Amino acid sequence: MRSASTAIALAAALVLGCGATAAPVQKPPRPKILAKIRVGSEPTGITYGAGSVWAVNYGDGTVVRIDPSRNKVVARVNVGGAPYTASYGAGSLWVSFFDGSSVARVDPATNQVVARIEAGQEQAGITATDAGVWVAVYGQGEVVRIDPATNRATARIRVGGQPEDIALTPGAAWIPNENGTVSRIDPASNTVVAKIRVGPDPDYAVLCRGRLWVSSLQGARISLVDLARNKVSSRIRVGLGSVGIGCGRAVWVANQAAGTVVRLRDR
Image (cartoon, rainbow, N blue to C red; front, side):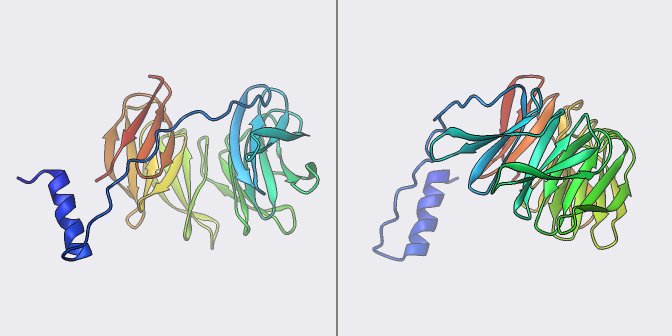
């Protein structure tokens, strides 16, 4: 059997043609810490928008704006309460609150709260786009959809349990729920069209390589959901306590219980 390096060299030669020399494959640079920025008390959420990084401080009721070119805090927005996380869309920053019932809209031009929209008690994840803002209302078993043009809730979709997050794919919104399910919502009708049983306590879901990857805080395996069939296509053992999932050249899973990050490849 040929080695992997031999196979790669042969494939490159076929593509480049006779007499051509393939460029050497370079390894990506090793990640390293470039800066540590003090932002406030108990930061829990982070997002990017308007050329800035925004960090949500659960412990002191603020959202901090960071200039990534200078690694420097350039604004501190007092939003009050216990903000949980944030998302950027429709030209604004949208902030959810675990201890309150309204979502805050922050204008990046002024770094001020310009609207508060009633959504429901104990909000968790929030996902904003130019077309709409989706809020997982953990304490009420609902997903609330906000129209950014009017700053009004246009739909309240009952999913039950304790919804934690919202992942959007073309034509669908996916809601991981502490009750061990993922609900699929049709945005055209604002109705739940499928419920998929995954691992216990799925906090987050991420679209990666054409499938939905779902964490499991209380389980040892993450679930991969087939979007076309609304069905778990495979489960991967990563150890107890998976939380965040990142998608890049590889898939990365944060394991809260073990204090580790697991690197995966799905094929």
